[in-house]
Length: 242
Ligand code: 5GP
Image (cartoon, rainbow, N blue to C red; front, side, top):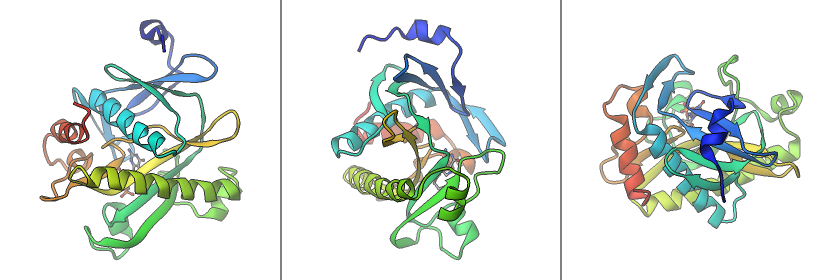
């Protein structure tokens, strides 16, 4: 695809989030720029980590390619070196879909799970995507009452999230990495189809080394455990991006 990135970046982004900016290419496509900004705790902790945008663009693109190969619909079209992704222009569903294989993070803070405990079956959780309200957990009735999605769409979100989990869990496992949990977002295409959207990167997943259980994701930054970009580089190498 012939895309004049320089020209597109001259225009104002249609959306700028905590770590990505979105530019319109045309009615059907957007250009996503992965920036070096890193935040935690809904933006309470902020920094800039050189090279993070590059690694997340690479890793995200690779993971969307894995999903597309497994016939899971996504917004992904192509990667553009160094920090860009071309994606379908979709309407983002304001539900963060979280899938957990192993107990960690907020699950252990809120419920009596032990960190590292394997879950009998994956947990799928819906959070309201809202900085203003601090991403509270949803149930089906609240999501429908807020008009975030229909009952059929909620079913489809769960079904797709579990498929994403199976696909990525296997992919990482074969590369010596445990997929602990992750958050994905969905978009509605013009035809009303739900597709996996946004990003899938160590910013949005927990990844542990299978042998050593070393943390290879944003928890390094959240918990001040050292060189976060170095860990993302390990992930990128293991999955064959660099
Ligand atoms: P937890 O609920 O334990 O904080 O997060 C569960 C998983 O979803 C983790 O992999 C975490 O990175 C991801 N996650 C949940 N909410 C968000 C969010 O608002 N932003 C990002 N980047 N990841 C999130």
